[in-house]
Image (cartoon, rainbow, N blue to C red; front, side, top):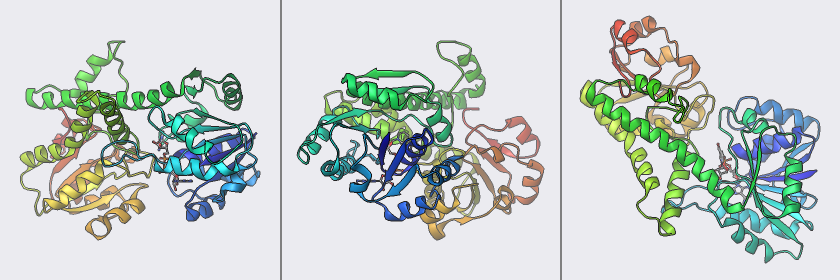
Length: 428
Ligand SMILES: NC(=O)c1ccc[n+]([C@@H]2O[C@H](COP(=O)([O-])OP(=O)(O)OC[C@H]3O[C@@H](n4cnc5c(N)ncnc54)[C@H](O)[C@@H]3O)[C@@H](O)[C@H]2O)c1
């Protein structure tokens, strides 16, 4: 089948490469000509394990082409995926301008009976707006559907090849049959539902995971006041099958390109239809307040930050990605700098993005030990594997101070303290 993917960000590149791998011919389109140029050489502008290899393989087999030209990308395709960004507007609502603009641009070139699938995360009822935009620009028959994306950065290729579910939002039997056929090579359940349900399922899934993070951080706060240990509590909670031991991450709160904006968008959407002051607003507020509160707690324990040299380990919002959107580092570092601390940072993959963001305000280095050299405080922000077994002896030798802040609870506090550090974790 010939298909088109519009928007070659994280979701678009993965979607295009995976459908090409299954033998489809895929046009992947982006308005950013620089990105398109780079992608046509097989280079990816972000780090995602195994993605570059997959793109290169499919370019070589002539099953994948990147372009900025809507006409050539759209005119012969049977299915078009819209994968453009949907950031939050200042009022928290999903800003759909990129989705609408993509719809407007593709409409004049579609062939008859094309299926236009929204993969971007959008609020329920967006399909109807897309339909209206397209109807104004074509006489051809088309169908819109919604297939929200659930991949996780860092494991995006594996997730896209082995999704835990594919949700197909359409009430049209022919459309459903065609989309099921396109997704046939993918293992896992295919769940067919109304487009509105599909769109809301995506927000519900992210809001639920964000709620678990906010919840465990609330319990961690209580631990810090009572001598309880959050890691012990997680074991106790996890033993209950109704709760489970997975997905408990006490720490600096949730970040990344999805959770913060999706919770905000769901809260704004709920409020817009009369469900005000609900859970999602509260979760969003707790997350916004999380890092400023952590900084206050930290400075209560270690004294003034002014004049201290802080070695930051980890800049991406989670391991195995270079993505810094809403990463804890983007909130911690400005607050540290504002308090008069100096910051030297290391990350295995995110330094180029961080350099653009912080410019001269932060120095960057090439290993955790170089970052620790002469530092008063070691601040571990992202749980990259290479930070999990640091040589504490070596760290102690090179550091000026003895403060070890482990915002991901990677280390055993007793072991770190034994080395002579002051250990500060979360909820312990
Ligand atoms: N990143 C994730 O992990 C993830 C996971 C699941 C769902 N999503 C959702 O998928 C969507 C895309 O996310 P992303 O992270 O890939 O976004 P992104 O910002 O990385 O990429 C979006 C791309 O769309 C392009 N674009 C914007 N307007 C365009 C237009 N009119 N025509 C063609 N291209 C255009 C941009 O240039 C950009 O390259 C969002 O709605 C997001 O919420 C993202």
